[in-house]
Image (cartoon, rainbow, N blue to C red; front, top):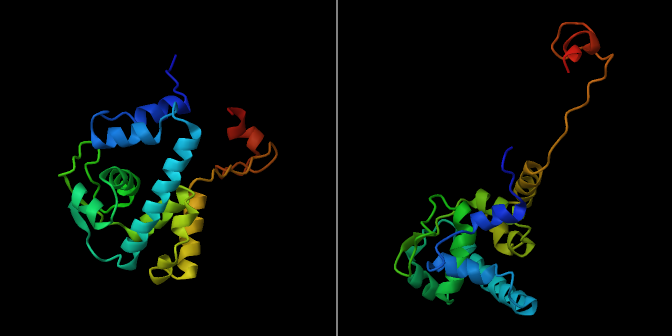
Amino acid sequence: MADIKTKEELLEEELKVDKHSLLGQWRAKAYDEKANKGWLQKFWQSYFLVEKGIYEKLLKNPEEKVEGTVAELAEKFGTSVENMVGFLDGINDSLVERNPIETMTEDTHVSLNFDNAKLYKNMVDAKADWLYELPEWNDIFSKDEQKKLYLEQKKSGTIIKPKKIGRNDPCPCGSGKKYKQCCGRNA
């Protein structure tokens, strides 16, 4: 019998990173199920404000190639190395070239060269309205383009069931026979 994994097991596998690495330390703290819920909520509220501030700066000049070590970028954006690691974890899928976040140290050279459309869609996918509704997006995409990207992302996760073929409908194979007398026999 196939080994079927639960959502929790899949998430745990995805989050498996060397616990001593910067990313491992960030994830252990950010996703600690044993942590006090109030503390965790304050942690994320604080992080989201930092994240929003970094994105506001990046989106003001989206063509600028921002790069440096993890520590240099933390200093540039006025945040801790820990918060910069969390930011790099979140933006990595939106970058033109992914950073080696699993093995990075404070001295690892990283880039924040992101794909505008991919970043916007990933913000929508994460349901981060405080990010995809930032006014800086208006200088990058028109309202119509934003709406189009939003809908593309929302539709990408929607499963559309094909129309059910009735027994007496014409067979979709094009034979001209009724479905029940053609391909429907074997269904």
